[in-house]
Image (cartoon, rainbow, N blue to C red; front, side, top):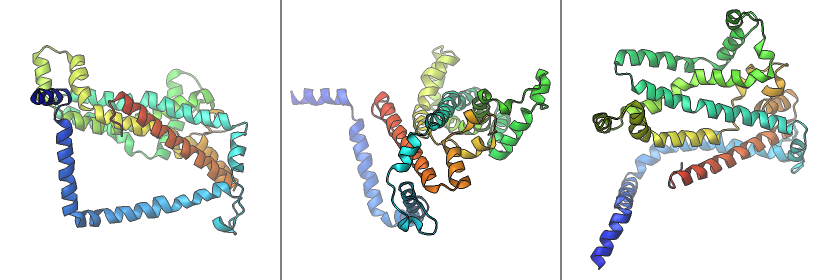
Length: 320
């Protein structure tokens, strides 16, 4: 009876947890044996992280103070949550928040699948020479500076630019709030999608060739090969990248939004990061701008935890 119960349990749960536990124990023994090497290699990175990441976090105290440069962080008077109440009750709060969320959410919606599609398409190219040339073309935009990219966008979309000349119109696209998000997201996809596809391409290159050959022998077409062989090979990377990008949904790059911003498209282009820059550095209201930045960071952390929890539930408990 015990033998039957053991075999039934083994068939039900498998030996994977046992193998994982043994592998974990072997890794722990190896780390304990070679802890000096780990200390030597990890200590510089640990110290740099503490110095440049954690010590500056003390500056968030400014968000709760009427900060004075002469009195410093310690000597400035404490105002509590007044800056947060001021921001949340501001008539522009919802506008800045929705601009940030829309720009990030639409960018994730349209931009996230593109690197995956590029990697899957590149995997279908059998000629090594053609594949390398295509990769060179789609990777190159990543090395263009953000400011240079924004200058190119402004030039192409100017009333006398090549796009307007090709269409036979004289529209100044950069002054249209309704066009800002499309311009921002499309230029971002063009610049970063090729470079983001590298990890997917590498994962597909290391996938099981036997499974692909077996699928071909069984008569699977290209779409079936992608669905049942190639996508499962890059599933874990897709999940990790989605969690990271969704968790950073409030962290839109300041430089690009500010460089594409004009007085006319301000209703759509003013986001939290540009608002913090304008209030903090241009107007000198350091406490209020720090409170807005802290609010942005807290929302980011909440979104990261929430997305990781949802993906873990949908992925049999495997999150980031």
